[in-house]
Image 1: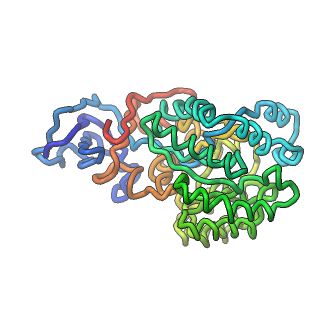
Image 2 (image 1 turned 90 degrees about the vertical axis):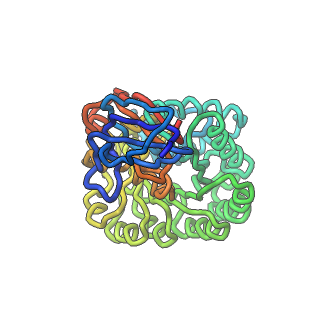
Image 3 (image 1 turned 60 degrees about the horizontal axis):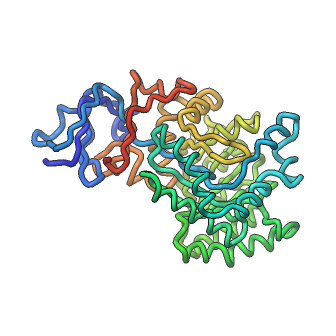
Length: 402
């Protein structure tokens, strides 16, 4: 079998569902052709005729699937360092938002920035993710809150994929906050999102999914339902910011619509967890936001485990509540703050994150037929990727076999 490239003398974290634990392979081989894995497993099991012009000796290094950041707000204008100071002085996230800060303050900066400026600023954040082995990233809009500005954000996000070797998934988050022009008229703004924005975004082909912020300072469950119905009418997948600050039963609503994911989930209850499990909706946990906002109620990990809900992890990179661009630190935070295991953390940034994007058949594990997205590490054991803080052991990153 003639391939484009073969990696030999590697140790693999395959995360294949038919293997126990992390699916570890000690003397492993990965073979790639046309950007796809054609073999991943023990050297002893490799086809005898396996050959390639380009053979890489990994010298015993570990290979994992390329990391996946399945929840970011990477494209935005300005920053919110001043709000960080306010929180240090005792102001809450809700108080800052109700005083005109929070999301709305970033809206003004994002509207004022050109598409090129947004792309250039986001590139710096994207490069930090790439430097730690990320090969796929989801990017949400939601800082424009007008049709023109939301489209600008989504175009800037898509443009990042032309500037770097990475897969970009875009999500329309028009229902992130009430636009300044609709202050005091949340229902009117939701109508704008549903009747004008979602159809236009769908027609432009700029979004893979639609998201909303279902929260007391965001949108009610009834308003979120309208957003989901509009998304479904356009054939777009849905996902939801749910149960971050309170329990509005957004997770159950997301499950009802077969959402790809429900994200945050600090205040999730048992009914919500059961609904997510039944729908196959992934739970995306965001320890960076939990840490940065100094929350005290962690997501109910044991409850999610008991119901068999998929546990994904992401940076939630955003200017206000998680200015974080380190997936390695996310895994450490998930272990230390949420008491997730090493296996859960590694799966959360790969296999389960892929499912949270609807890409479970495409990426996230080292298996034949999957895209050849790899991260090659200078480590002695996989636990090092979760254990260390402020240390990046990435040796090489491979996207689509290159």
